[in-house]
Each structure stands twice: as C-alpha cells, then as structure tokens.
Image (cartoon, rainbow, N blue to C red):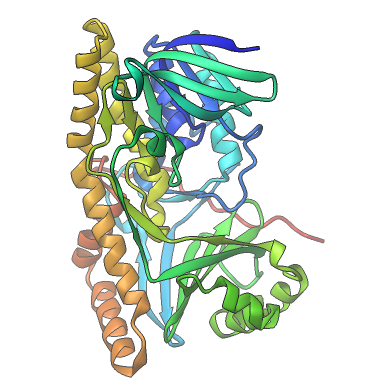
Length: 420
C-alpha cells in the first residue's frame, strides 16, 4: 500500500543541512517533509566539528543554549611537525562575536534541530525513509514534483513544489536527477578511531601531528574521548589491513605516543575503526526545475578545518529566505528555479575559497622527504609568527558570515569526566 504526503518542500536527508533548512522553512510557515534514511540520529564518526560561523548561526537560531553541556569548545590549535611545534593559534585572538569552534556530537545537534522544528506546524520528519525515485512531469525530462521513498511500512510518495537534495556526499538524489558532476579523488584516505582522552592533554586544543609523509588529526570529543584521523594512501586500506593492527598501533606510536597504551586496549579489531574516502565534488549546476542540491550533495569538501557541517548550515540559512520569498510571490516553478540559481550564485564563491584552502593544506600534509619537510615547517612557522597571516588564512575558512566585533561567546572550559 502506498501512503502519500503533500508539502511545499520535500527535503531528502535529515543531517545538519536538511534539518537546519527544514527548521528555517517551518519558522516561515512553509510546509516541509524531511525524509531521512536512518531510523535514528546516532551517527558514528560523522562530522562533529562546528566552525565559529555556524556556532554563531546556531546561537541566532536559539539552539546554542539548548545544546549547552553537549559540546566541547576549542580555544587553540597546534601543529607539531617532526617533533617540533611549528604553529599555534589562539582563537580568542580573532575579534568576532563567536571566535571558538566547537565539537558537537551529531546526535545532539540533529535531535535539537528536529525538536525545535517540530514546535512549528507544517513540519514532518519521516525516519527510516529511503528515497528510491523522483516524481517527474512528462516522464524523465520534466520538472521534479516530489519523491518516492521506501519505508518499513511500505512505499511513501511525497508530492512537493520543490525537492531539496541534502543527502550528503554520496547523494542518491543527485544521481537520480542526472545533474552532471565531477568527483575529484585526493591522494589520501583517512582511518578514524576513537580513544579515551589522555590526561596529559588540554581538552580545548585541536592537535595536528606530522612526521614525514604521515599525519594525524586529534580532536577532543565530548564528553571524554579523542577522535583520531590517520592518513593512508588513497585506496590503501587493504594494504594496511594486510599488515595487521600492529601497523596501525605503531603508526599512532610515532605520531602520538601519549595514546600508545589506549590504542592497544581499545582497538583490538578493525571494527573499531572507520575509513573515510577523501574526495571533493564539483557540481556545475546545483538546481533544475523542481529540485535544488545543497550541502555535500552540491559541494563535497574534505575534513580539513571541519568545513562540511559549516557549509551545510550556511547553505540552509541562505536558501530558506530565498525559497520563502519565492513562495510568497506565488511559488511558481519559474520563481523556485530562480531561487535555486540565486542560492548557487550566493554561495559558490565561499565554497570555492574553502575548497582552495583545503586543497593547499592537503598538499602541505603530503610533502615528504627532507626538502619537503623543511619547506612545510618553515611555512607554518612564518604563519604562526604573524597574527595578520593567521587572520588571512583562517578567517577565510572560519569567518565568512560573522562581521568583526567584540567577542560575545563565553569561554567554556571542559574536562573529561572521570573514568574511575
């Protein structure tokens, strides 16, 4: 039996992009149905890094107070290369209302977004709903008019004036739409694992460790753990597994000996790890009649500087008022298509700048050999010694929305809870 829903907007994907958009639309009295493939919000090893701009936006959405106690605020970033500290950044040196990134587990963020959106009429969230087809006028060539989904209860049809693809870096809706795109693989993948937080580390600092061609990201994670991302060559997971867990343990020994004991205790099988395929996606056209792509579906980014969630949230608060204006003017297909095109024009340059910064960092991380290491360390030391250079480099990633001004954020000190 096929059930049917009707809304002005159908959002496919209940991640940060889709639920933030749904909240912003529901606040404007635009009816919206969100289809989320998973039956819950418990997403392991998903992006938890929220950049300062998105923290600022979450505050203005009324969510930051609601999330108090659920996140860890980051005050510093340090890069150690070849055993020497080559760069230190103190986020309080940046004169913006919200200068601090936070580490916020996605289950808490998504639950807060869904609960807040649910306070507004016209919002519907269907979890366990997998999009399996697009509804089209005039066969495959006509405008998109909604989505067919598979649910545990049977098939669901959602008819909507606009469908929004917010279903991530492997977007099924993007594939079904036939919108062209180019996937650009990078030279590495990342192995993620989670370990107890070492007592000798400060819980409010991002750490990057580099040794020759190896590097690792060490991210404090609420409430008492550290997420570790270790680079491996593109497609190198099979070779690493063939070497056994000992090779993984020894790599961590070289980069972060503080974690040597815990990695042997916690990571006793490959099931305790997750592999992230690193690539970026170029999508020339983010919309077509009846459909808009947003977030990773429109512009996949890499893990560097935690830009995925950041751009997802900025996309949502940019797109929502454009759609609201289009609906207020009658909501015709032409007006909605124009809103999608304006959305791309507004956001494309910021995405391009973030992608460029990420790709430059990827190249620096990949430098190997004596000459490459000397060049990388020298460059980081130059940037570290100049506040103006740090502003120039990091502000492009972290401060695209906020305007300079006095710091409004209260400084939150976090400590891991006792594991005794």
